[in-house]
Amino acid sequence: MMDLVTIGLPIYKRLDYLPNVLKIIGSQDYPDVELIVSDNGTNGARLQQIVKENCSRPFKFRRNPATVSMSTHFNQIIQDASGKYFMILCDDDEISSNYISELVARLERYPQASVALSKQETMDESGDTIGKSSDRLPPILTGAEFIKAAWGTYTYGFAAFASFVARTEDLRACGGYPELHKGHSHDDALLVKLCLDNYVALSSTCTFRFREYESSHGSSIAIEDVAQATKEFLHFVRSDPELRRFAAAHPVQWREIRAILERLNWECYYNRWNGIGRKKLTTLEWLKAAFALPFISAYYRAVARELAETVARYMRSRVKSLSLGTARR
Figure 1 (spheres, rainbow, N blue to C red):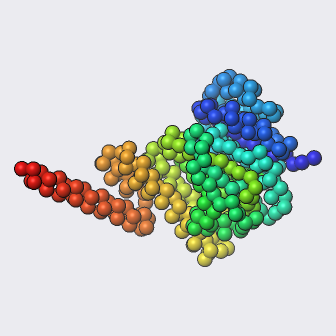
Figure 2: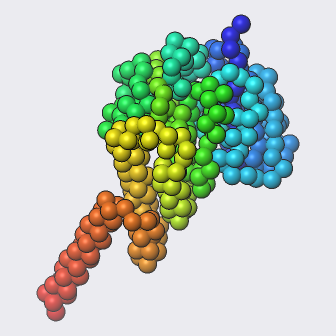
Figure 3: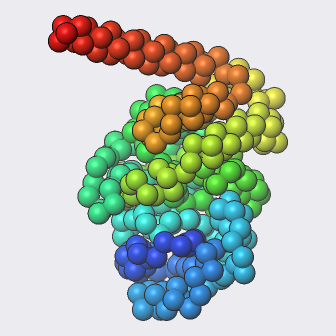
């Protein structure tokens, strides 16, 4: 007998990718899988019919009578899980057929590890691969080493942590996904809580494929929502009880880790503001969004540089326009 693994499949309104992910779950070479399909978008009978038609494994179906937050929804699935091990798999992502068997084996081999992760691929809307992590992963890292490598130096080229395998009891003990606005970065926050004072096991022989495209949640979330989530993540880093306990026991190490986590989030907001935000917002909205975060010296230095460069580019274009107009006259 093998230990039961629960796969949580959260559903909101998007159903187009559902048949594919159900077939991927059915193709897993690990025999003892509990699938929980959870409807958070009041999809009615259509969702259950799609699951029946495309799922080759037994499944449990749960439905929220009204939509709850993403973090609350994911935690509901954790509470309903029967497996010793647990993973979330979003409906538009993919995993290799040996994903569960390989990562469960890693956690069995390294009982000191609280999380197991695979190598990664990033794909576009049609499923074409547009990026890859390193396939030369160490078998195990301390949580602190992992945080530094994943978000400090980007040593292994990880793009997202939407899926990993952990022990269900550990997920419940740490409180599950923190309640962050729109679920933005809540998977990163949970991973930090799980691994900070523990270990992370890694495998380069199985793969998590993360889908990234313009209309996906991560790309379409409004700039004001990103700002709110960023502020909440910064508060989480400074106030979460488990993180505070680690900080008290390892003050020097924590200062470095906290700086990495805070930079990760303000840089994420800055890149959104200066990328998608510049294209989609009016000039006034863009300027207002620049000052949406609390005072973070490094962030506002970056903003000041960009605003100065923007003004300089504008002045150069005006001078050029005036010069061309004079020459024509």
